[in-house]
Length: 195
Image 1 (tube, one colour):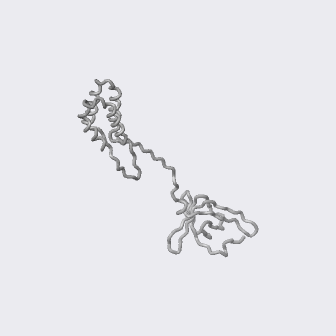
Image 2: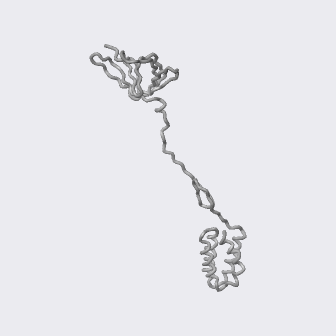
Image 3: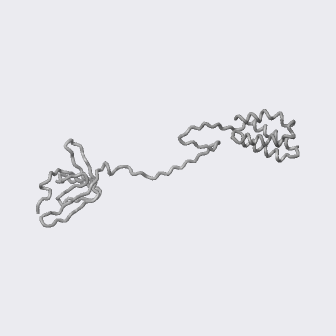
């Protein structure tokens, strides 16, 4: 039997086994995706590393994807046609599905992602709450108290929202016949129109 790599330029490579064994000075023909070795006694297995030293002294490593053993015939001896990939390409990080859960608790109920929140949050102060309670107490003695108290409560919950002006108008309409009672509080209520 003859050496099939005899007429090709070969170089010495090193086989690094998964179990830590090292085989050196193996004659091989190295290509970018295949390495040919005509010594069938070398125990090549998938995931082994084949290393060669470049003329600059740096090392280039290939991982065995398929050992590609070929049984010889006629004048061609047993040999390997090993399919390989460069270790640097093989060890690229694999994208993974990442699940992120955000539990957000805030008073405004708003979340801004990659944006600036230019809105204004208005919360009622103790004095503001007292104003609405006083209005409800004044309405309690009136005939249409349920309608007025309902409009006061709707107006209170709409403070700082675009719907406040509608709720304010509904309140004014419901107390139109009792304006002398509620007129002292109108300036305080209109201040909420601009908030």
